[in-house]
Image (cartoon, rainbow, N blue to C red):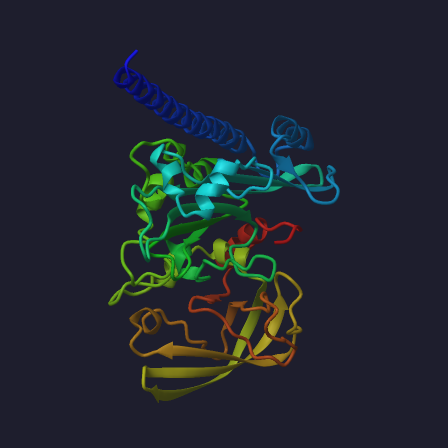
Length: 414
């Protein structure tokens, strides 16, 4: 055998080894991504079967048994109280119990992770949880994340991109100390469009990441919950990767949270737009979300006009007598006379046209802002404050709507 023939055979053998290694690497990455997608779809289908306040401890145990390899809980887990979490991800995720390989660590250390991505590998993870209370499931949540693969070596100021969507059920769609809702504008205006849920995204996540969060009421119809949490897990395996949040959650198309730089949250209107009329917001939704609901009688009103660099406004200070507390016991006791301070911006047509000024001699329902975030001290002498639409006439019809809202609350916080 001549040297030339030997060299050709060595080259062919080496090329075959390289092709084989590339093929094995490609198949390995594809298999683990597709297995993850299959498991994620099964888990999502199981979560759809949960009916809040109806699914039993036996239902929860079946889920724990099925997903025990990826599930865990802290402390004790009994029919009386248990929060069970299920989490799984690709080998590129940061989940502790997902095995990490030395070659992947080498790629990360040497900033060559996109070599893994060339085989259509991507960081992807799924998280789901449910909370059992008094023998039934009362809460659910989910989170899905996937990276957007790069097709070239990293350059200066070239960062990985990612898509993340999350959802969680709460009895009140309002900020509290337990439920901080860091991505939500915490405005009641959203309830005019969809009273069962709120959506939002964090500020500053525009270029290299897209994140959306959905908070929905525990009384949301199951079909609506399914729509809000119908994730497209093909983003884990597509050769043409998902690049927008709507690819991962189709329902997000109607929210337009990443359409332009003006919208830091869905509660921030575009320039020139006005918030929805208060009459469009269901009273029962306000009653569900409020901590304190008071019946008051207006005694006297003083209105003063003020001017600031950012506009003119009317400051209305009304003396009111507290008639009763209709929800949680409030700091303001029945019979107490307190001030209700409210500001009306003169350039806000939605306020001036709706007649929400408190008229002496009339009775009103006030959704008073409470110390939900524990950042202010409320006493019996504290003034009442309320949101733009936080006042309603005290009528039998309004009272019936209040009861509908109160009935949607439970005893588990948040």
